[in-house]
Length: 114
Length: 110
Image 1: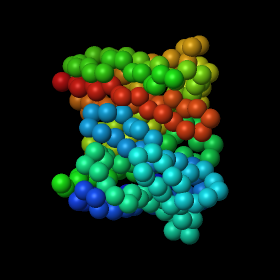
Image 2: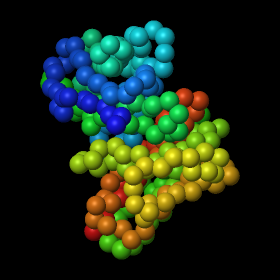
Image 3: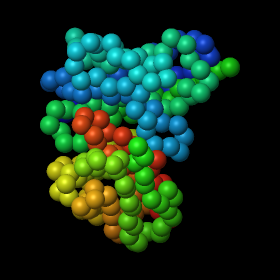
Image 4: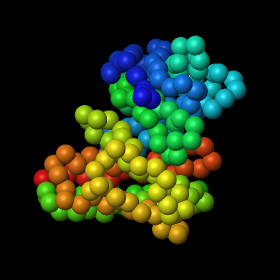
């Protein structure tokens, strides 16, 4: 079955430190890959997406993600975290032809220490 | 361009009642998906509509239904509410290749 794994439930980093959030997916072919962010009580905001081509993709708010086919991973990174980045981050995949069905990981909650 | 809007933002219902949630997609988008978000199960796909037709459905009981109108606005309905239906219900509007989410409707079932 298709699945998305975010192994870290909760991560705490200091403001200004670098960040990497992990995401692994299980699917035969390369699906469309997404990272979304959710602030408390809010909907999901798209950070970035990967469909094909360059495996390093840039997103909003200074985030980037790298697709590694050999590891079935799509990890999210930011070189310097700001206090406003505290939120929950979701990795999602859309298998080709799935018609609007995004499969989400369980999410990683990011806390930022001053 | 205006984003995805969902109404109402908050709802409180009692067990056995039914509820209807509404979603207006981004102008020009014809696909609308619905998701349920709970602390235990996370984000789960309910169904997807395109041009008034349901194209895909998740693994939810028949109490969960939806429809889409000719202007692409969509509604979802939950009948005979159960305590476990308490959740954040998110609607997503799909453009060419990406889903954009609304703020959600927080449903509490007492």
